[in-house]
Image 1 (cartoon, helix red, strand yellow):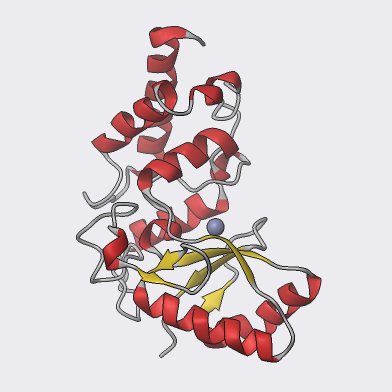
Image 2 (tube, rainbow, N blue to C red):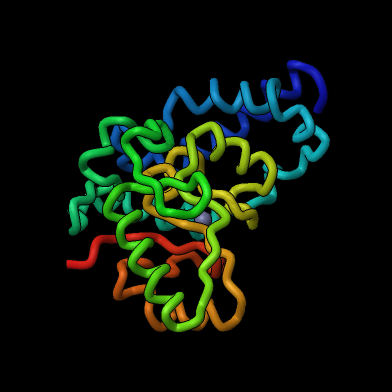
Length: 218
Ligand SMILES: [Zn+2]
């Protein structure tokens, strides 16, 4: 699968599978034609190393849980509470597009350079402090994720729907600054399962106990 022909074939295959996944009623918001361009850049550009693992997005892979959740959300068209659009976007960020939100529109969460949608950032800081009072440390490994980073992650770790660990690019809650990947020891995992929801963070993706999505608590 080396050379331009191989790359073109991979892109066509992946686009076909994504079209099949999201065909029913996908609003013209995120993803779409830009995906091929971004993927082509990811394949031919910065992530040359990814071509060493051509099986990552191979035909045997299936849709991941994050994909299913995102697709269900898109198909439902149902309003989501808490200032979110039907496809899970914070209303004030929806205009940017998933993974296209500028850092200036996101808020720091007090951990490294990590940023989230402002209500999620505030909730995390409160939750982190509450955990600390209980002697529990909640580490953060990932937060907002750009569209390009989502494409790169899909290349490296495979689509969740295909047994991998990456959402379909343009659908991840990380792309709205609404999800955190946490570094949790056993005690911290138990603390999050007992207390996360009251701060709006829910473990919503099977096979990813580190992934916590935020929905405002009303
Ligand atoms: Zn995650």
